[in-house]
Length: 135
Image (tube, rainbow, N blue to C red; front, top):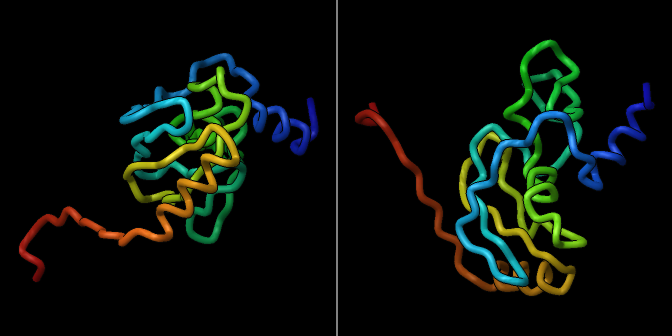
């Protein structure tokens, strides 16, 4: 068995697992960036997911605790497997693990910097879907 740090490094470069990762819902893609739909309860990046006061480690889609973690393969790992033609993939921003929404990925450091700068200059608008009468 490989030590955890070595397994983590293998996952960082997109080592294929026995089962395919969940497919990415690609909303937009060109040669510089992609916009994907991030489901709720999926982290943007690897290794530890905070659940209350307990942390668990994600390795090849399996959690260090006994629960099924197939839905918690981090978005960056899914992106590396979904876009193997790109040498590097960068998260332009992050969304909290419980949050769903659009996630911007860049295929070069320059594209990541430009997209990040554009987000910083723009006005952010947040929408919430609510159920019930608010009482």
